[in-house]
Each structure stands twice: as C-alpha cells, then as structure tokens.
Image (cartoon, rainbow, N blue to C red):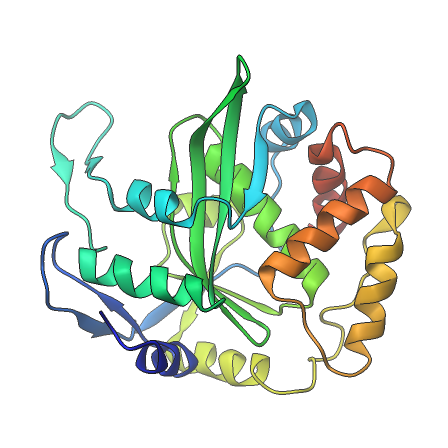
Length: 267
C-alpha cells in the first residue's frame, strides 16, 4: 500500500500513481505534459442529460459504496463497442487498497448512481477521486447504463460548486470529458491553478453561491458564512448541503430537477 502521506504529497504536487495491470505490485508516478480540467462554471449540460436528471431515473449518493465503485472502475472494459477484446486496468490491487485507506481517512470520496427496481437498488454508475483544500482530483468513472456516469459527474460538479471547490482535475483529456466541457492545458498552467486552489484565499469570483436562483436556502447561507473565513466544504459535506438545498427548494421527490437547474444557471 502507498503511504497516505506520500500519496497526498503527490497530489498536492500535481502527480499521481498508475500501474501497468490489475495484479502489478509496482506503481509509477505520472506528471502529464498536458492536463485536463473541468471548469466548474463550464460544465456542458446537454438537453438529453438535463432530461435524464429531471426525470429522476437514478438515485445518487456520496460515499455509500466506495469500494464497489473502485471495483467497477478497475474492471476490464471493451476496447470498442463492437469488439470482444478487453482493455486492462491501471487500478492495481495495491492502488485500490491505497485509495480505500485514503477514503477511511476522509480524503478520498465516491459518487454512486443507483437504479432502484422492485425495492432493491443496483449500482449502475459512479466515480471516485481525492479531495483537499479547494481541489478535487477525479480518478476514474464507470457506467453500466446510458448517462449514469454523466449523472454522477453532474452531481459532483453541483456539490463542488456549492462547497467552494475551485479546481476539478480530470488528469487526461478524453472525447467523453471534452463533450462535458473539459479543457486541456499545459502542466505548468495546471500547477499554477493547483497552487492557487491550495491557498487560504479563494480566487476572486470563485466559490460564491451565485447561479443558485430560486432554490437558495439555509445550505447556501451556511456556505456563504463559511467562505467568509476562507473555509471550504469537503465533498461529503457539500453533498449533504446539496441535499438540504433540494429539500429547501421543495423538490425532494425529484432532486435531479434542482441539479439541472443549478447547472443550467452556471453553464
């Protein structure tokens, strides 16, 4: 297992670990020449994704099944939809154990997307990553149903915005991330943003509660009060505040409507 202090130092320095295969005991440290981030005010909410959110097809939770999300992210995937070939995983057992330890320590988090059927729920999508200061480093996501991983990312963006996070790191650019608003930049620029997000002072214009519109409630008031002293909410607390915001908005039966409203106002 990677020592948690070393792992967090790596993230704070702009690098992260990978492995060659699921069973590989060795790791190597990655510092990409080009880095992908998803601007929290630039999430692209398509009409189809907004419709999925509003319909409430899925139930979304935070930190309810971290290990299961990691297992799903580490599972082999088809190289192409029309192929039987499977790609390997860079999430080795050692890496998984390291992040599960970070999760136990409150520094790694997951978003889960569930399909509820006949009184039971099935995990159909999700993501996980590492959070510190005003930074969230997304590690991996998976989807077993159409739009499930996109729904997870939409909830993540809404919660991070509410919690005062300013930097959502996506590591490598993919067409999927680009379609959701991710942008690519040199590592040097990323390191500058990373350093800024770790400072005690929020960058001007970031982390405020504008765009919340008609659903503003007690959760936002608490957020504004916390930001006055430079505080920021960790993802689980920001997610809880988001659920409170949903309840305050009178849409507890369809939280996806509130998420869609938040992201429509800020995208």
